[in-house]
Length: 312
Image (cartoon, rainbow, N blue to C red; front, side):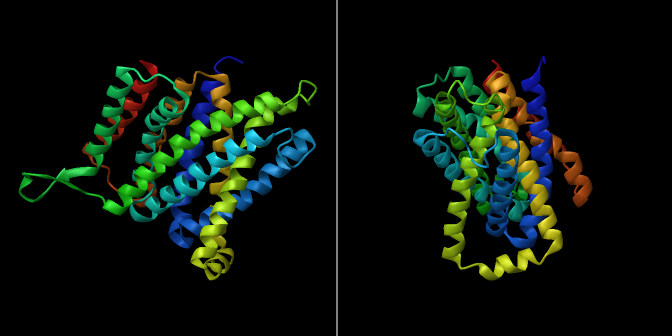
């Protein structure tokens, strides 16, 4: 089917938009740490059932030690660090600005690939990165009193969480790429044909195992058992946590790994980075927030920077 990867990438962008909106509600009700723990548990159950139906085993068959090592490391970086930062940014200033900082992920992935894998970084990649940062700056900076200086219009703590989210997502993506390459080599030629299609979902399973272990450690350190009991009794929170899981690690993350197998990674990443644009209208309607022209310009400049990073 032509444009399979591009279509999957657009589905991922829509899926992540829905995830951001659902997670915004859930994280405000039960907190980022509790939401992430529940989300990892639910995603493991969903992925295990899917793998069992499609491959006959409820776990990632044929995955060797190197596959587990790289994908687990990706899970720690992308889920435990990245998503923890992302959901905390939602609590501070909402999912629209949180997703804006996620546009840092593709440039950071480019830098991580350059440092870790020796991938090339051309001059226009650095230029595109500057455009992306400029777009974020336009959105989060405003003139202070008297109009003589610029100041942050968002809390610094939220901005740091947003940067951490983009960092975790970008580095985690590169680690996932390495893990899936090892997984592909580990699958024998006589394996069921479904394994090729299901490999991204199996890879997401390994990442979710690492994410669950990491969040369990954080949960025990915080001694948040009361928070978990409260969350489990909150029907609205559990509904939105379930929706966050379905559209996030179950559909969105798995299809994002699949998309780069069918399409040019740059085009796929650019299309998946449309979430900050797609979220503007539903977010403003749901929260009755007026979006300024400056914020719109900043968002489109940011996404343009991501596109330039990959497509020049």
